[in-house]
Length: 366
Ligand code: HEM
Image 1 (tube, rainbow, N blue to C red):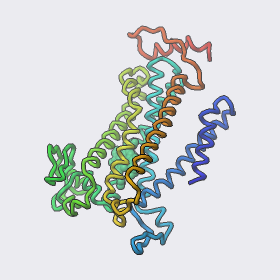
Image 2: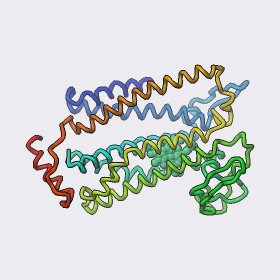
Image 3: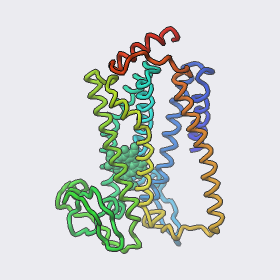
Image 4: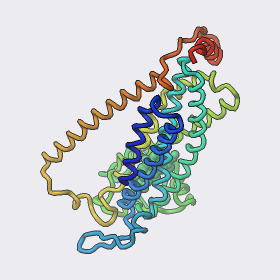
């Protein structure tokens, strides 16, 4: 874990600040090392987190969990679903940012060659990884049903396990009345997805006392936000491929506009996914063996509030600086070149013609 952090931190510096200071091969190597380092970090972080969801390879003595099989601890039952789901989520998030920046360059008729390459790379990634994420997510959900049935019951707002589950598109799950208010649902479709049988049964929330249920509203809505964005991502990828195939991608201003505004989708999907995972694990810290209430440290509330306040402050400063720096890099464009002269085309001309005109004007500078 430490090796991975050092690898990332060292080569991130070379990657961000070394563009003009190191040879191109070393810059590429630094980028690959950062990607490798983050993947290794992700491996260990997700192994630890997965253990909290599906704590295997341990034995509980006097209320304390002791590892008895490290292999089972590391490669616990939900790890092989969580790792690919999270890595794919990270690659999709990155692809959306690249898609948006590339589209913005093309709409502004700046850095045209680079913008086109960015658009092609991002669309290729979205078209392959978007549908793959849906498949991984589906398998991930089946694994969760097996190990954390109440998380899935909350995701599906499924109360009564003696009846087939509907696919609830919208509702307000009401813990007091133990029903769904304002429900819009497709009967039996939940059972079809989770049991591959329209009449299949899976546990409902009522099968455990209220104190053993996760908070319903955040889990229910975060799941719909994640999957909804997943579907938009698949659409962006497939429509992009279609336009590319028809050779109208760089003229489709409406698509470029959509793409230019899609940079935030991945971040929201990732946060939503983690809300499903962590809120859905409640009321447990380690599922089935340690309750959150029993894991609370004897620290005064004021100390917790101060630490939290400091975290918010420090991260606020770091993120603000990071966002400022990334925006500056985007504004400068590839290789830190200043903006090319704006294109001279009239609005009625196709975008590609305007782009070609801008390229001719800017070519002496290259
Ligand atoms: C397209 C359909 C998708 C399905 C069916 C799906 C399914 C799931 C499920 C069932 C979980 C919770 C598993 C658990 O806690 O045990 C989850 C978590 C998560 N999802 Fe998704 N997901 C989808 C799309 C996405 C997308 C597009 C992203 C991000 C770009 C994403 C990011 C995450 C993250 C970060 C988590 C938390 C980590 C984890 O538990 O794997 N998901 N997803």
